[in-house]
Length: 308
Image 1 (cartoon, rainbow, N blue to C red):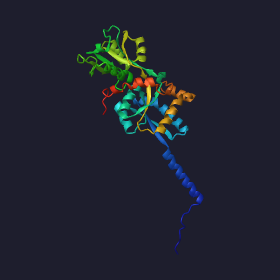
Image 2: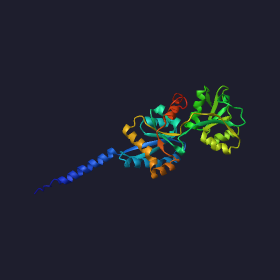
Image 3: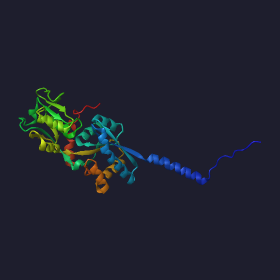
Image 4: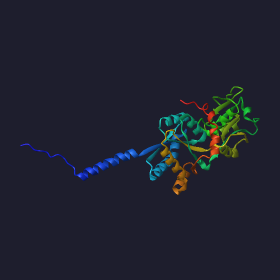
């Protein structure tokens, strides 16, 4: 005698429940999004520690405001070419760094400024090129045939701004291998020291003729310098730090991020996070005059760094 196995059937309400559950799950997956923030550092572990609380706060705030963003990742780059590559490939969405470094990245990747970041409570800054007080150097032309110590290749104040200043005066720069090496007589030799303390020490010990750092850092070092120091040249003021967005970032999403960042300092919790984020005061629009000062450097950027 054969047996008949009854087919499995679902109550209509159960079928409706399963259909709604499936729709909810697939919709949640479609709507949830991750964006990625990046910066450049020679110490990625420490920089990740600095940026992670900011990224987590941004993700939470965006989600709470109804945005589709539910996660903000952080990727630390080691160079401008790496950031440019990530932006072009859509691997990162936001880049936060000093303004001329970001201008270089913008020029090479198509990204654009979004906001100014008041890092350490400062909205703008400039570089100084300095020497020992007893030096005979009185202008940048006097440095021909001698060596200047820059900080690092992706530093706005410690390399890009001062290097551009030489270019604006028609003075050619030539890389040397050590502080004691001399360049050709009609050019200025350059070497990277990779930290401000080394730059100042080299100048104090007369190992290099000059160095370039931010005006604020110079003021700090000048107070404790072993040898009196003297400023030879100031550069233009530029925004201290900025946020840039990749070229094809969705306009509505960019507006959500921009609005969120501009409001962060309005709450106690936001101010606390910003203080822990390298004493950031706030994010705001870049003032037109400061933006104009910055953009005029763009034609001089391409030759500063090779892009692989």
